[in-house]
Length: 221
Image (cartoon, rainbow, N blue to C red; front, side, top):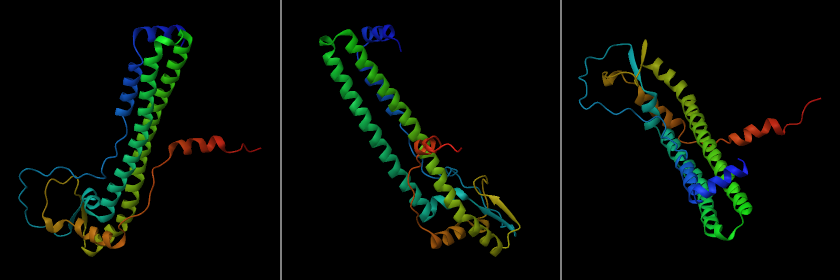
């Protein structure tokens, strides 16, 4: 941004505008969704007809949501989200304080000095917005990876129950509006899953480090 544009910015609005912009950046802070939230149940359950031999129903969303490891993943994602919010809140608070200080001092500062400090605040605001966007993508990547791990644990158990129940057709419980409970093998899979694994360690994915790694690698001759 040129000096002329910044002179117009400062003349037209106080540094409180920068604070407001920073607040808007933080308002877009990432939120980690709970893994595989189940669809809301119908107000009136559909009447269940007789069970169909060989036809089974399985809901991955219900399995993740009701299993011990799925609940652990949801709790851990909330912890990581809180850490990100604390990080962004600290940067936002620092930016707000510095913007208020500049507003209080603007009458005693020269035009060039005021413009330079306003430019620094603008750069910090832009940096905060970029950080919030990166953290949002990191939390999303973390959730996808963690849920992928859970599904990796579920798949062989689902095959095992499918064979034990002598299923010849497996329906996706997430897309079925109603079925006889005797055909649903989700609970059987969850029991095996709880006996196999209840939690596993994972941290927030670091997209900044991943992006910097190729650039830091020495060029091959």
